[in-house]
Every structure is written in C-alpha cells, then in structure tokens.
Image (cartoon, rainbow over all chains, first blue to last red; front, side, top):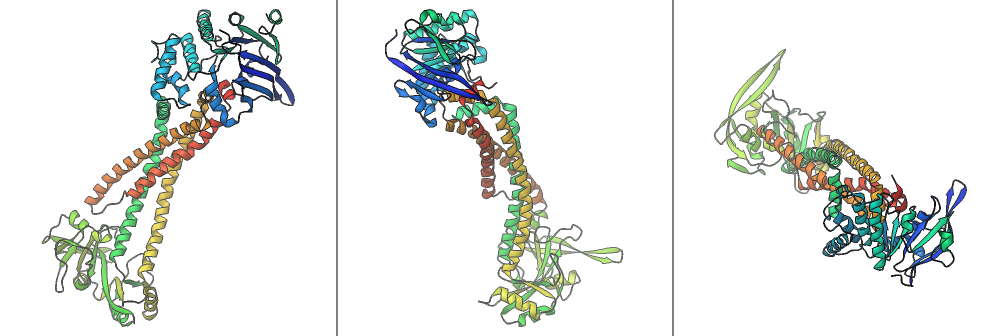
Length: 238
Length: 384
C-alpha cells in the first residue's frame, strides 16, 4: 500500500564527530525520500552510519549539515524547545532492548507516550487497550515487563511507538534481542502495519529481516552504497 | 504525573524510607529545639508585659543573679524627680535545696507589699493579698498544680542559712488565699507573700532584692533610669526598654544556638535527599532518555524529579513535626507535673518546619533534576 507522496525527505545529510583532533564523518551526504506506508530497511556494517541516520531522523541528535523534512516540515531547523513536540507527534521509536519502564504495566507503558501531548486519561486508556489488542496482547495489559517474553515486550514497545499516530515509526534493531521465531512475529507485525499505511524505517543487521521489507538501503562509510528503491540499484544493493 | 512520582518513590522503598527518615530527623530537631526557643520567648514576653512600665533597680555588679539592697534606697529613689513611687521586692527560692529559679523556671517566693502586688494576672480563686495579711500567699497556677493546692491549703516554705560547714534549714507554712490563673510567665511559678513576713522568715530585715520605680506620667524611662544611677550609690537601673533588650539579646543567643543545631541536622537530612536523587537520576539515565524520545519536555522531567524530592520533603517534614509534637507534648506533660512546661509548638514553628522541609527537598533536588534534563536523549538511551 505504498503511496507516492514522500513523508520523509533527506537531503545531503552530514554528521561529523571529532575523535580527539580527527574528524569522523558518520554521515557523508545522505539523500533519499521515503513514501507514506513504505517499509524500508537500512542495513550495513557496524559504524556505517545507520544508527546515526536514525537518530537524525528521530531528532535525537542534530546533523552537522543537510536537512530532514517530515511531512514537508524541515525538522532539522526546529528549535531545541520544539523538538519534544515533533518527537511525540511525528516519530515513534522502537529499540533493540525494548526500553519499557519496568515499574509500569504493559498498558501504562503505552499510556505514558500519550501523556506528554495532553491526551485525556480515558482516551489514553481506550487507545492503549486498542493498540495492545492490535499487537496481540489484549490479554496481557496488566502484566509488567518482567512478566512478558522478549517478543511480547517488543510488541508492547511497538504499541507504544504507535500511540501518538506518528508519521514515521523508527525501529533500531527491533529483532536484535529476540529468537528467530519471535523475529518472524515482529516482522509480520511491522509488515501488517505498513500495509495499513504506517511508514516504517528499520535499521537491522539481519538480512532475513531486511529482505522482507519493501526497500533496502545499504550504507557504507556514512554514505548510501545502494538503494533498492532507486532504479538500477537493486542488484548492487543485494 | 503524580502517580509516576509515587511509583518511582515506592519502587525504591528502602532508599526512599531512609531519605524521608533523614529529613524527618532534621525537622524533628528543628521542632524540638525551636519549640524550646519559642517557649522561652513566650515566657519572657509575657513576663515583661506583666512587669509593666517600671524601672528595675538592682545592686551594681549583680549580673544575672539576685543581690540585696538596703530598703533605705527606696526612700532615696522616691525623692528623685520623675519617680512617682518606688517599692522593693524580695526574691528567694521556694525550696533552696532544689536549685534553679529566676526568669526561666524554678519556684520563687516574692515578698511584695500587698498594695504593689501583681494584679494584672487574674485570680482563678480566692483573693489578692491585703495589708495586714500575715503568712498568707497568692500562688501561681504551676505552684497550685504542682502542690495540688486550693484556697485555704497550707504551703511549706524553706529557708537555708549556712553556718560554718553546716546549714540550717527552717520551714514555715503559709496559707494560700488566692490562686492566679495561667499566665505563661514566670509568675506561674511564684508564691507572693507580704514583704515584711518574707523579710522576717528569711532573716533579711530591711533588705530587698530589687526596687521598682514607677515613673511619673510622661517621663522618659531611659532618662529616669540614668538619673537614678547617678543619684543613688551602688545601684544599677534598667529601664523597661533596656530590660527587654537585654533579655531579648540573651534569648537571641539561646535561639541562635538551638536553631543552628537544628538547621545543621536538617541540612544533613537535605544532603541525604540530594544523594538519593543523584543516585536515582544516575540509575534512571536510560529512563529519562526514553521519556525524552517519547516526547517528554525538559520541564516535565524537571518537575518529576523535583516533585519526588519535594514529596520526600513534605512527608519527612510531616513525620518530623508530628514526632516533635508528640515528644514535646509528653515532655511538657511530665514537666508540667513538676510545675512548668518547656516547649511551645506554635503555628509559626509548624509552618517554618514544613516550609523548611519542602525547600530542603526542592533545593537539594534541583541539581539532580538539572542533571536529568541536561542529558541528550541519544546519549541517555545508549547509557548502560
């Protein structure tokens, strides 16, 4: 269900860190577009810049140069004070190690994401239950993370990421901490969400996961080495 | 937000408990020490009010103690222009073997001329002294309670005189004719008997401890006190303003010592809050990073962390005030049985204790909260 309107546009994105006195180009002129509903994976060896790229898109870090547009708004120009609003309205994060709050139940872990934009308590409760049911955990809402398996925890994390109906779901190694069987469940869930119009970017080391996505961007030394979404690149990429 | 604060505190029960205990202990010290200081202030304030507007004259060189003055000095003082009247009072201890006495406690016998007795304090029963009363007494409320006295009862006075290496103790009963109501001043621990009988019993004829000079209307009391000092040999006069100043000066030192000790205890409690919060912030680095990634604003995280510190302050404060209140209540009860209370937990003190606890929590929680908000979400999320 890919629409041809880009929800994300990245233009000449650069990030340079200083390692002592030596500049390290973590991102070196990255440009690409992502359409609404696309399920895209970013692959590449460690240090290729994929996680840095994800941080820039998610406004967790600032680029040295270049631009990121989400829904035609240049988020890289947003002030520091505007960043939290953009994060909660436009971005949903899924992390490798789930990052659920251990003291809260599954329901409360989803609920907390909606607190920061002032959603009413009843609406939060209703939506959290709806989302947990959607990811197949309707009967686990009152369980704490320690009472859930790795796969279940990651599904709670996905439900949390979807809570504010973000424009883009960013998943950093979402299957990195689960077994192969659970991996399939997570990938299936992501595919299902994408089919329903959710734009998803997955950073992964796992080619089995990448191959199940609509498009694969391979990164090397801070640059895009290949992009199966661009004509003529498919073979180079895989 | 509040539920998250509660959850975070209850998650680390032991640490939260110890921190609250630290604050409670500090505030407990503030309440108990402050209560003592407040009680002293109240007693002195009320006592000074009851002493009215008279100039107090004592023998020169008796700093803080009670000396003796020859009654002839009363006549000299009366002749000084600006003095409308002057009278002597003999102060002695009711029980010379028990020690104590003075403005701050202990039971005292006041030998007074019946027409000059302190009538600003009302009677709960009986009558004031009248001229011609022999060994009759008007007693303060604490004395009445301590010795369980009613009008008509007898009270034993003791006098002790040193003779070479031994001492002779004389006793004599006086009959109670009146009981004063509670004044909260040192008059509560007083036994007033006619001056001439007091002088006779204590073998101190023609002697008084203090002379009080009543200024004529419109006379500057400080000026008059100076004039008395110049006109009468070997006396020291203190105007009511000076007396208040002197006593308040002494009280200030006492208050400073007690309050400083209490504040020190409270600051130690505050440091325990800071330590707890720093540990907590450091442990929750990843959690704060996550909350930021989920769109939490800096102020939300700041409020959460400071809220935790302030809540521990409030709870610790309430426990400290309650514990201090309970302890001072029971101590007062036990002291009252002996005549006088020692602590006064005033609304002002409770407010100070509570505000102090909350500010302590907030101030000591600010730096940890600032550290929590300063973290970049990416660094925080990568933190292990």
